[in-house]
Length: 73
Image (cartoon, rainbow, N blue to C red; front, side, top):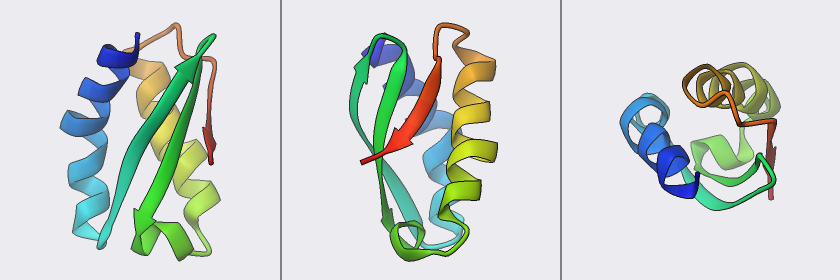
């Protein structure tokens, strides 16, 4: 599942975050929980929790139904 998540992040999530000066790094996938590190502008943005839940988590759950949630570490 790690590779599936990595592919979706690289193809569907990172390019959009890069438009705002941010990025995302995949840390791990454990029992359906994806751990990521928001970087650049996304790492210190006051809207980062919104982005994490409403964009990153929603995109991953939509593409990979086995994803249970996403947390920032």
